[in-house]
Length: 338
Image (cartoon, rainbow, N blue to C red; front, side, top):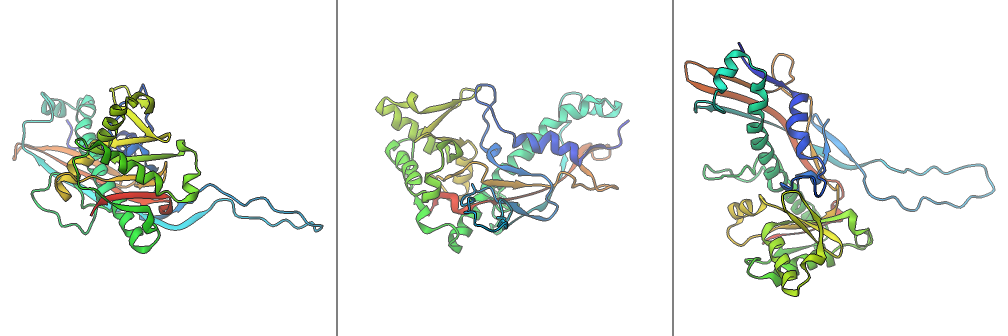
């Protein structure tokens, strides 16, 4: 009989966290959002420097008559640091069980119990990580009415506004998002995409289109597709097609990815007809965690589930670390509601 069902930290990381950040392959993979576009660092216990991913230049040197060679640094760590926050979930689940027969399986020590309950934690954990990874702000006041988790660690848009205020992201690489129903105003959606493209810094503009990507809220993507449809050119701009029927459009050869959770989160934070968008190089957004972090006697238990007969309730505890950062903020163009 199981006293407590436990998933070790590394196993939990491999089963829940890592798959959310795996690359998706068009025609074979399901598109659920753009969390897979993050670079995953899985060994950040507290904080760590981010490796410089920028393309190297000015390596060639003239040889002189001496035998001395001047060794240049090829790649190293930037001064930018990524840090993780310790997070937990502790819940009493008063329903009869996770699925029909879950209590019986747990009592009998059925090894399938873990496989059957894991999707419950996968969906909840990945959704919370995604919402915080983009819109997290630890200074935002959380209210009981909030449906989305956006206060647990700082997300990409918080870093964007922080770097904009510090001058790391030049003011010319940002603009206030128009307040509009993008689906009803396709020209406005097109204008947002075009402005993001036009505001690229010179070095970013000269990178191949395949090394960059737009990440936008769904209304912008829908409006842009409607704009192309009006011109009779939608099919010419489809660059990817996922197995669940999601079409990925492009602008000047750069793919446009819409995350389905952005729209309701933006509505909750800012109100109706609010949108957000980023143009950056792929791999520039970084998510950090610690695949060895956990609690328990050996400090390596990430998920614990048990049933209390006196309460007729399931209990679970979950422990993870998470944080985000932008490797190269100067290679970011973004727009948020004013």
